[in-house]
Image (cartoon, rainbow, N blue to C red; front, side, top):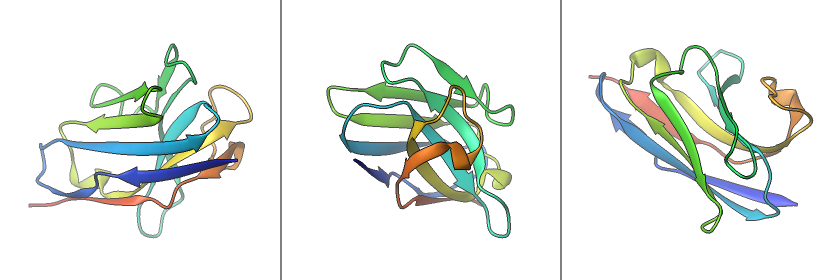
Length: 121
């Protein structure tokens, strides 16, 4: 079993930056970030392999977002730069995919509760 807890969400102005954290307990797995805006399906953002050697990004976030991890702290990070209003969503971290890369939420076994990110002036 893995327990995941996201933190770091908040309100930021367009063009600003925000960093999210996903603290994990239990075994070390590949981890992904997803997001879900009101009325929309959960959307894949980025993923990182269990040892940090592999990273994968969804096209809308590539170049603006950076995923990283510190296994000594059992934490995965998502640094978000040049934020846009359309980045507004609840951001979730997920662990233990059925394959790599896995862009469908159905392919991830464990989930956190999410943290709200709002990009607005």
